[in-house]
Image (cartoon, rainbow over all chains, first blue to last red; front, side, top):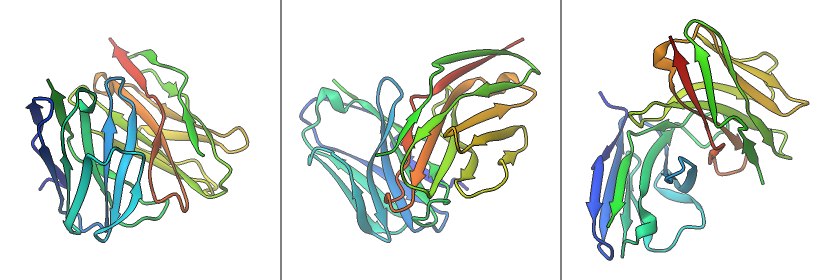
Length: 114
Length: 115
């Protein structure tokens, strides 16, 4: 029933570890995104995939690597985690890349790096 | 580059009253979309309303309406008959055509509805 789902919801880990966040959408959308919400609640785009192809790669450290095995899934792998990576990560999807297309967000993954 | 400005970090409104949350935007692109999202304390991002730059009429969705003033580059959200459940953070966001479909967000307005 859930439209955009993410796992895990919470992730607590030590500095230097590698972790992954998974995202799945059952809306039949072509385009998926990762956003980061910092401690001040500011939301910023990280990546966008359209039909499994990367179309947006904002200024994100290359420790972050998205992977889209198919249109319904977009995972985020983070290497060598740093304290500054602590944030809420949201996955989103939209039908296409048109301006009018609404993006629907997942519930978010709260990552805490100790 | 596009920019969204929300100048009200916090707002209070009495239950059943109407409230306007301000949003101004800046872009040189003639084709763009404006969105409002609600983020309750539980953390999820809920889509509320959309306005296209070429739309002639202001968008409405139930108790939400968007006061779109293109010349002033403003897209204020009006919530009528506020309810306690409207207490949340509200984000204004914009997409431009050809921008890869990324949403650029404002800093948000925390709304508290009081009895």
